[in-house]
Image (cartoon, rainbow, N blue to C red; front, top):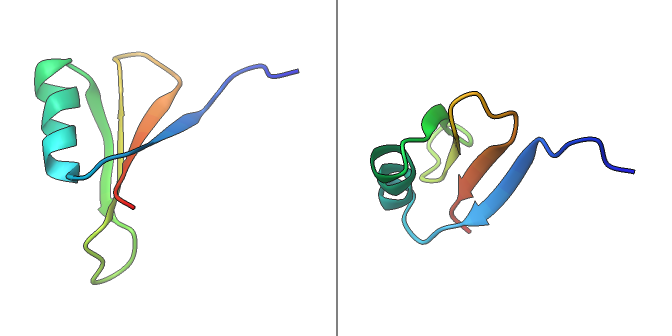
Length: 61
């Protein structure tokens, strides 16, 4: 039985636009925004509503 969900991955075409939508439009907190590895164009980008345990990972495939 599940007790909680920690992260949910959402595939997005544009990480910057998705970040702006979730933070500026919906008011989510930015939890992380770091490159997946040195020189990577994709980032580990996590957002969540204030106080929430579950984070959304905005992942570019």
